[in-house]
Length: 193
Length: 299
Image (cartoon, rainbow over the protein chains, first blue to last red):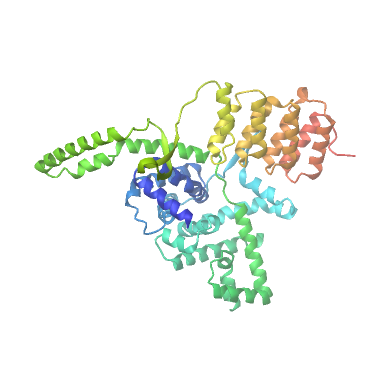
């Protein structure tokens, strides 16, 4: 409750033109916004564009924010619309993987993560490359909305009710969307796990 | 609850999105139904696989985004009408009302300015202040405790002690990986024991792989230093990231002409060959042992 009060105070200060308050508001959400955009779009350039546009829209419209929903719902509504636009625009979602430059050249970050966590199970390690490729495939086969709902629930840990609010729909519709997404995931990853 | 209902609710259960009563039924069902219990275990596994496959955010992307946003906001603030401009716009409708309002406004401004100049000293520009407490002072006056931060710019060479102090402080800023990355970049251009210690601190404590990697690059200049080498061995043993462990090996054994005669390092690398789960790191260890003319195994 105290956190919410702090946030309301920050929003009111930012609405009154306090730049420091606006910056603090941005910083309390910007890491998750960037992570969501990066996960969804798999492109640092696109994620950066979404980040910029989202917070600029917040800046331009904060004076009209009337506390009739939570700030995070309002922000994620903006972010999800921007991400959906991007996803619909390009249709093809398979992007270059986030990579790491080492003395050996460019290495796939996904491979590092999978290898690091699979060290106790050699069989799983052998399969990690195939799994990563299958994960990318199945994420690419979801509709933009299914993808967004899945990312928000699975990676951002948002409640279905908040997801529904952010997408301008009902909790039930968000639940159905998640259901379809998880069914596809289960079917695609079934023989790997 | 039927098996079909249970199996349609697997993910919702794992996400904690089931209604309380249904959750109870689900748990009772899976406790007694081996098929659904298996399905739940399977569901849990692919959730874990998805966690592993989460795309990483490149380490400097956040700071880059913040810098760009700050520039954009500055430009927006300059071009957008401020509260004053908005007020003037709002009183524009007719000529006579404009004149009347302006006259009234001038009178108000005159009174207010005279009042303010007597009572209030404006803060110097750029000062950030925050009211800490408000209480009653002597003679019934209000007494306000204000914390003021005066921003200032420090410039100079990166090895200038007055600059270095801030670079080291920034390299440990817990909240801002961008700031830490930039300060480590500058520290990499400097030298001396303070710089070495700061880079070692980043290498051993920074949660961000990219920053640890940058710190390792800077430590190349200290690869013959005993304190740095002890730290590199510790990183080789404990760092979570295989790229960092591989990079640490490259620094410990940089090349044929620069090998300190160290049976301890050879021993460590042989241990790596025996127990390291990552192929890339084993490959770096093998190369290093070749350079050292040491065998790959312990006998």
